[in-house]
Amino acid sequence: MSRVVNSVAYRNGNRLADISLPDISEVIKGPNTFVWLGLHESDASVLLQIQEEFSLHDLAIEDARKAHQRSKIETYGDSLFIVVKTAQLETGNHTADGLREHSEAAGRNCTIEYGETHFFVGMNFLVSVRHGNAQGYADVRKRCEAKPEMLAKGPAFALYAVMDFIVDNYQPIVEQLSGEFEGLEVDIFKGQFDQLSIERLYELKIKLLQLRQAALPVEDICLQLMRLHPEIIHKDLRAYFRDIHDHVARTIETLDSLREMLTTAMSVNLALVSVRQNEIVKRLAGWGAILAVPTVVFSLYGMNFNNMPELKWHYAYPVMLLCTLAVCGVFYQKLKSSGWL
Image (tube, rainbow, N blue to C red; front, side, top):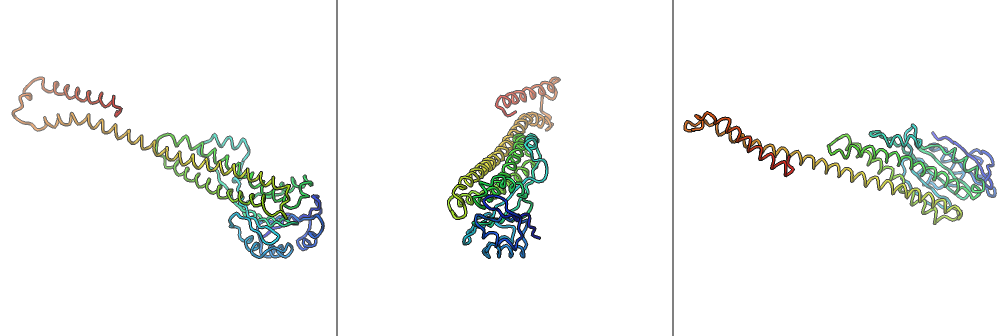
């Protein structure tokens, strides 16, 4: 069920009034006026009404009905249709102190909730449609209304503010994933095979890939908004979209570095496990060589020949035992000095 969160008209950057959907088409005809409409989820009847009020393209409305769209920017006549993936940590304490505590605690996993926000942008309107558990944009709207001189530049500034909010929410997740990796490093470099740690590393790699897939298309969206669509994006706002582009680029670089470190850590763990196994095999082989000496000697005496003079000798047993121990001792010293034991 679609829900209208906010429907507000702005003139010269100042809040004019809350307006109903049927009045939108008349209000946006006013000079220096635009409408910022916020929806949560999408309902076919509401979208059709919005299409009629803003003269939106059929294909854009069709895409907005479905939540699972890829991030993109498309041009339909005088308006833009933009899809951006949202991401946030599962409910809990996500403050700086909380992130610091997490980075120090090994073994804790974070859960990421993904959603989408669809934007219809024109010269005199901005419609945002939230899907999933994406955070609301009430605080973003308040911050924009506190800067009427920027809001006077049109709906593009409101678009920037929402996209910047979405991108800023990526950073706490990156820090959380980085802390999770640091916690796993302790187990990785123990040199022992731990199936649970390997599984957690694989899950972390999937999280990094999913977040990267959500953030990467925003780069292309910002590039288009910086260079194209001058009728919608005021020239003074291009620097703001460049700032979002820089934030996304840093996020992607960090994610790529974490993925590379994670892959390297997995390789190092396997190498350490192999080295440890080789050491065990070498020790077993060394002890096998030492034990071969008494095995041969005692097997020889186990044959019980009648013509063996030493069997009649009173000191035969202790002398043979001492000789066997001496040979074993020589083998032990040789293997110890060569690093096999």
